[in-house]
Image 1 (spheres, one colour):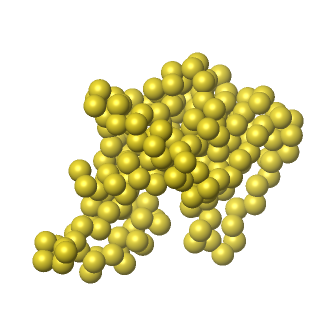
Image 2 (cartoon, one colour):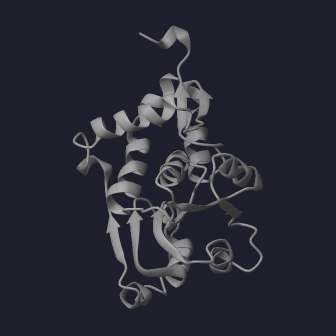
Amino acid sequence: PLSYAVSLLGMPGLTAYVGIVDIGKAQAGETVYISSAAGPLGQVAGQIAKQRGCYVVGSAGSDDKVDFVLSLGYDAAFNYKTTPDGIQAALETHCPKGIDVYFDNVGGETLDAVFMVMNKGARLALCGMISTYQSDDPYRLGNMFMAVRKTATMTGFVIYDHFPQKMPAYISQMGQWLAEGKIRYQDATVEGLDNLPEAFIAMLSGQHGLGKCVIALPEAAKP
C-alpha cells in the first residue's frame, strides 16, 4: 500500500527498528515490553522483537486493540485502562521474568510502573510521552530511583538523528520480512483534508483506530 511510505516503511517503522535493535539491543530470550502496542510504532516494534527471539508483551487502550496486538504475534497483552490492580500488577503478571527492554511511547504512570518491574541492566528506549502531551499537570515519576538500583540505561532518541544512515539497512531487512510474510501492519485511513482536525484530536486521545493515522486525498486533489 502507498500508505506504507509514511508508516511501516517510513519514519514510524524506522523508529521501531532503531528502538528495538540499536537502543534496546533486544536479544533472544529476553522480555520486551511495548506500550501503545497497537499504534504505528508498537505494531512494528513488537514484531521486530519477535523476529529476534524475544518474549514480547504489549499494552493498549481497548480490548479490541489488545486482540489485534495478540494477532500480530505478541506473547501477551493487556488493556491498561481496565486492568483491575493497576499497570504494575499487570506487568508483574504478564512479565514473570521481569522486563529487559522497554520501548516507551507513553511515559507517565506506565514508565513509573516499568521501573518497578525491570531487570538489572534493563534498557529503556524513550521515544514518546503521549500520556503527558495534553496535561496541565504532568505525571510526576516516583520510582526513578530504581534506574540506579537496577543499573538501567535510559536513552531518549529522535529518529532524525538516525536518518538516513539507518534507513537502507531497515528497508532491506523489512522488505525481506514482508516478502516472507513475517510482518503484518495496519493503518488508520481518514478520507479528505476536511476530516484532518477531527483525526488529529482522535489520534491524541487514542480513538483514531489502529496504526498510523493517514489522510487520503480525493482523486481530484492529487497531482
